[in-house]
Image 1: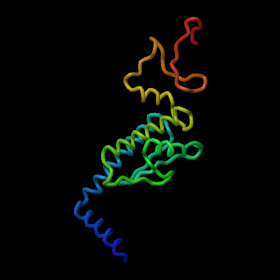
Image 2 (image 1 turned 180 degrees about the vertical axis):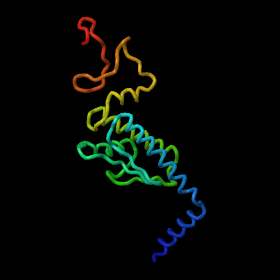
Image 3 (image 1 turned 90 degrees about the vertical axis):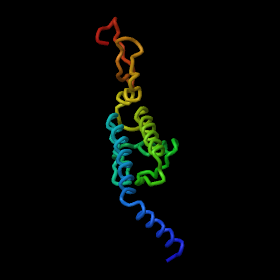
Image 4 (image 1 turned 60 degrees about the vertical axis):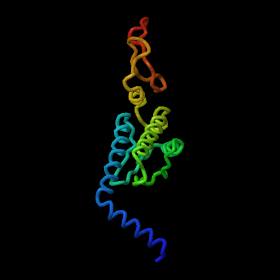
Length: 165
């Protein structure tokens, strides 16, 4: 019954009527694109984190057993994207395409750091290949990307004095 609350609700409803179904359809399409981009990145690096979306809503789901997973949300904040840990996120008409790009970039950067340092499950070698893109050239002829004794990505070079080593 508060007059300011009623005026705000009326203004919101008039905006929805004016914009029509395109408003929600555009938000849903934009959110689906963001969710698909983040999910594709996670799949490429074999990370068990899931991004689930519906309409303008999306949720970052981390499976149990990922003790350091909370760091993902701290890193997102560090990179300028505030998400409330384990709570739903929403895109609105206030977000631009540049904002969506910033969300995807921060998510990719945060996830990469956690996988690269072994704080979140994932394939660090696949991550290294993905981040290097087309410039995935070995430092010397015949080297291949693999893992060192500690499991970190490393270039592997055959030892000519010890075949198979």
